[in-house]
Length: 168
Image (tube, rainbow, N blue to C red; front, side):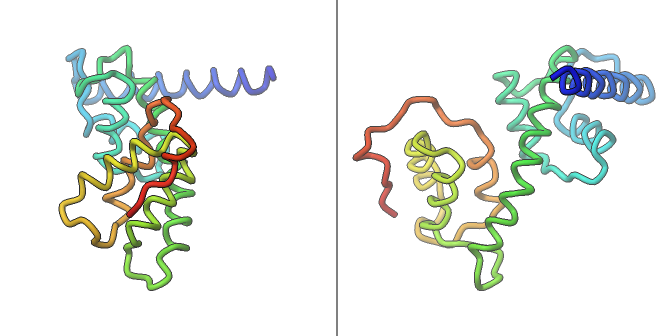
């Protein structure tokens, strides 16, 4: 247990050090850090991991409850970006397995399956919102269209057993 705590503390210190260095080198004196700046900081921390700007913006929204990230919230946002990045690594593989035709897309039914696999019984509301937000209902779904829905936390309101299956 102490190794985990030390590792976590060590990683937090590393993130704080990189953040301070980045802000100093780029003459950033503002208390607000933009999504693109956070994306750059994240790539410096985890050069092998890629994360879309949309995911960084969603991480800010999830962590800070607004579109701005203040300096004292950066470490928490970086941790949320980390969570999303590692989740997406597994989801890319799952998505590719469902995309048997190698088109880079899956059916809406398969997208709903992925949402339920990630969010379990909490997926009902997100699945309905995802389906109603689609510009062309019934069309195939790309991972880019689905990634925010998969990584965003669900409302923790449990569905009734009868409501768990969303019809496509």
